[in-house]
Length: 255
Ligand code: G
Ligand code: G
Ligand code: MN
Ligand code: NA
Image (cartoon, rainbow, N blue to C red; front, side):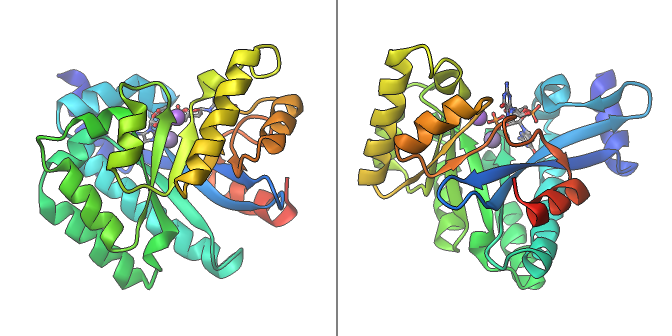
């Protein structure tokens, strides 16, 4: 309960921030996208990651308001980067299932916000963990279709860790598949993980999807992923999540 009260206060007092982690195009080496990652600058406890407060934000329902703020903030940020960096720059935003289960007006509000900013809708990529798609009874799938029909893109996050991953690929309209970092971690020493990554990439390409490898920490992992035809990579080997101004500087200089 205390955390829920603190979260409400944090919203009112603008204690949330977005950090951004670059997503690198493995063909060009350029930074063409970034993932927005929520942070809470807590007055006593310092900078908190979503793992510290997301469960409370979800169970209290406050994630709806926090996520609405995050979406609008990320949209405004990508608008700025498109002006200064690259007109095709994209930002991806993580959504909790709770956010898609709620009021339809929320998604409508996002589309209006994107239009008001003069942003091409494909500037925003919605990242969904696989679990969200199990929620078929709810209006989740409908909401997702509506956002995509308006031109936003969709990435399936943490791919390979959920149930019936392959069924999801067939049933849902998505643009990107993000290979979970648990498959990338031991890529160099585990031939089974390498085989899985290679197979995921081939399969995704046959389905017309682009692939992002997550949690890439070493140059050796990166080389194997490039050889396997992976399209994008994200991870500490390039950069950790950082404030918007730092990402701007990095994107200008290149990784
Ligand atoms: O940034 P970090 O690696 O600590 O993020 C931890 C988790 O929090 C990730 O799984 C990510 O998907 C989730 N997350 C980060 N930002 C957001 C957000 O704005 N909304 C939601 N719902 N989840 C987020
Ligand atoms: O679940 P999601 O993929 O949205 O989570 C992204 C999380 O992964 C963020 O918390 C981010 O800080 C973390 N992350 C990003 N790059 C790396 C990496 O190279 N190694 C590890 N261990 N974590 C990473
Ligand atoms: Mn993500
Ligand atoms: Na992930």
